[in-house]
Image 1 (spheres, rainbow, N blue to C red):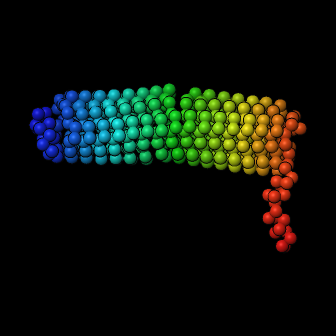
Image 2: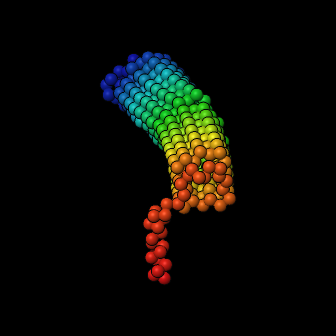
Image 3: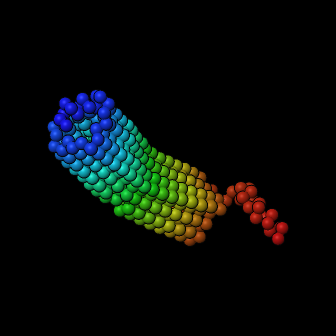
Length: 354
């Protein structure tokens, strides 16, 4: 089947099945709306070709050149793009299931609103690609290059990101739920409004990163470095920040409810109006920190160091403070007796009943 016959068959509504188009020159061809089943395009020249709104099943594009190809609104299932050239290709609103894009070059590709289920991107290059509202579920992103890429409202669910290159990437409002980042260098990156719920961030370097309004609920940040990070309104509910370093970080109105911060270093951090209800902060260090109006109600700060910290109207209601070091404790608020009585009325009733 030559180029003219292929285009004529597509225009006639025929299904292109079990065809071999290996090495064919189909550059710039309009193949939009085609139905392709088990078609081999190995090594084919498809630069600038259009597969817009096509349906492709079990097709093989290994080593094919699809530079600048139009894959807008395609539906693909179990197709192979190993080592394919897909730079500057358009995948807007594409639906891609169980496809292999190992070592493919998608530099500067536009994947806006595309959805990938169980894809393999191992070794793929997506430098400077646009992943606006792109969804990747159960994706293999081993050694993927996302340097300079734009990720906004992107969903990367339970992805192992530990070998992904993110230098210069912009990751705003990205959903990284359950992701693995252990040991990664993410310093200076922009993650504003992103979600790291239940993510593994042990030992990660977020120095100078922008994590404003990010969610870290239940995340593991043991030994992580967040020095000088911009993290206003960030949520660390039930997060583990044991031995983490947050020196000089901007954490205004951050929430640490039920978080673990044993041995964490928050020296000179800006923490005004932050919430620490029931947080476990044994041996944590707060020297020089700004804690105006911070609320440590029911927190455990035994052995913590608050030397030189600003504690104006900071609240230490029913807080465990044994061996804690304070130099400005008089400016803080202690137990609220009426509130304490209200909180313990059930215990008192049980005692009388006994």
